Image 1: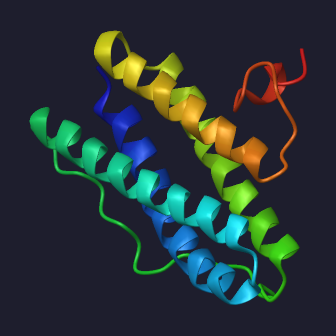
Image 2 (image 1 turned 180 degrees about the vertical axis):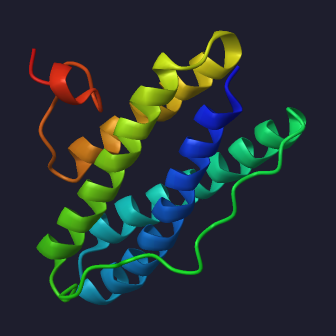
Length: 143
């Protein structure tokens, strides 16, 4: 089992939690309750995964990578469509990370990564993303 793979996923979750937290605040002002629910659900799910990854890394005897002091949140988040696009891009980045984690883990951890990938891919679709045969797999996405 690769601690480096888990650290990469954890770094992605730190970023997702930060960005989705900021987006939830903007979505609450947008007047779009569905968008707020989707972004808020994503925030809660990513916090849970962040905590699970932190525990898994500690269980392997390593120190989990820390979150950055801040992350870039794009400007112009005053319309629901823009908020949804940024949320979709954040979820897509997580799908790519989990696709990579699936390829670099085995057994129970791989099953966990598959579930995380599936949940993230569904959220991309909820945010009006494009269905992919292999979500997050980049070059294999359209085959």
